[in-house]
Image (cartoon, rainbow, N blue to C red; front, side, top):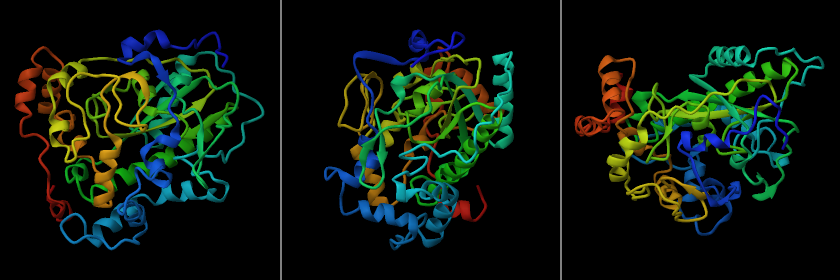
Length: 391
């Protein structure tokens, strides 16, 4: 891959970003992500797997009980609708857009490219337009090819296929999409899954619109959600947040309560820088997410290169979950689980002064006091409370 003179690969910034890559590093094969494995790997398939996927089409009888009624599943599935329309539109070609393949462009690249004299001003403009379309956060980093999947997945048979990305891509625009706090508070429940589905639908729309804007300026832009590459390293390098024990990016604006999407482009842009503030030090003493995980899929102890199975990247020293244990719980519930997000002490409303003050304490040498103050933080709210409008 060639790099323009103004955007050399920023691998010297790995330490600043908290990304510890070892000599054993291997690019990750998306065919091994736990959701793709659920379609082809007998080690992951179970009697619950089909129920899990069919519940998103209301084909599985909803469980009785608060948070798992027909109304809860109905809202969750409706929240996914726009994302589903996009991901299904080229299924006959093996392109599950946004998940196993990038979103296909609906807008040609303009013949005449707008001259960009100041990449910094262009970055500011892109962030403004991203927020205009509905993104809550936006950052820019270099296209570090280590975080690209080694291949995409043909959704017809789950085989590997080439990415077919345009030549000359240099930057990654990373977008953050806030999940509704009141719904997150009801995890685990099908109702809470509406918070996830709504943001997948939002991000599908937003990345397509922002990519169309860039293409109209005369530059390549490939809209992407879960496909093509690992978004977490890009989000960290773009300065949006820090990696945590719960496998999420902690942001100063929303804590872990976000979904991320991305756009690969050759638009000349100024790069943002990682902004470590102390999340790692807090996670070193906090195990609330690991303690709360029903199947003990989250790690204790310091970051390491240990991996439980093939659904984890090799050669990166970090906190790594057991994806097989995690997905088994999702499948049994027929819905996603984010208990680890709900109980995270950083999961707060930072528009409130007391939560901003807590954040300052947590990122300081007084982090132990902040942890004690968060002892009862993140207790589950009954889904019926959300429906009654009392949250």
